[in-house]
Length: 390
Image (cartoon, rainbow, N blue to C red; front, top):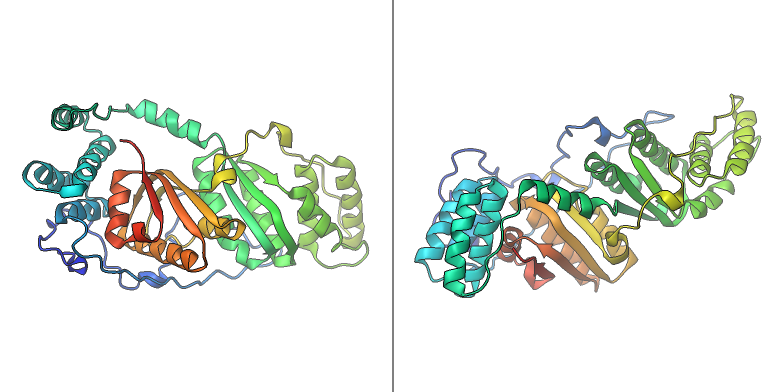
């Protein structure tokens, strides 16, 4: 299998398993089935919400002659989950090829791969060679336990999603991303401060998400809930039997705000209006002041994490939302483990569109493996990439 797209002379070794699928048709790929039921949005009460069918556009620019073939091979192989073959390509390259200004990149990629694959002996051997060759301190091995503690500490500030403008069916994608964050984190944060209006379908959507988070015992801090509650209160008229989901979301917001008096008044009006028993007061376990620190991402940018593949339409929603809030977008990718080729191309399209809209984008704490993949597709020409120290 050769990646002639970039005009390289050397073929990539044929993977023995999990070969990457051709990106044809990836434009309209559907979200892959989730392993955890948390990701499935329940829109059945009191009405179904139609699924999103947004198209993706993939446009890869040729940047032949910039990235050495061995580095391109390794980056592409790892993006296709062929870490062992990627190691082989880099092992040969760092000892036998002149990689020019990409020499440090190749060594960094190999360190990343050994760490990812748990090959501590190979890592330490490479560290000895690195110290001798570059006459500087080599990277140090991080034990799996330490990495888990670092991830936990990094996640302590809560993964955050922000909504802006009208709360309607278009909020489906960012709310799916919030549920994905909740799969890996005990607490998440939803910023509602920029919401200016809401329709009943949007209220049904948010109600569904909040019910799922509560069902799975996930804590959700709602920033700007007081502003949205004030908007919804104006839309609910006692005795006027309409906008039931708006009423229900208003009651939920009062509980998140620990405003029992406002809740009980709205609950009685809701019960009389819809001729049902009034809902019970069930506030979240933690008050807003006890809900934990604000995430660094909320103040400085957004976060990409885990593994991102072609079919994940919601992966870059938070990036777009962050760009609506500010002109200088900072994306923390310290917890982003892997991205396949088509997802990288989709990211390129997103960033190119933002730059065309006079936004600046900066990726911070990227691994050498991700940096190499992004250099292959030319992402470094439209965005700033800060590679973390190995």
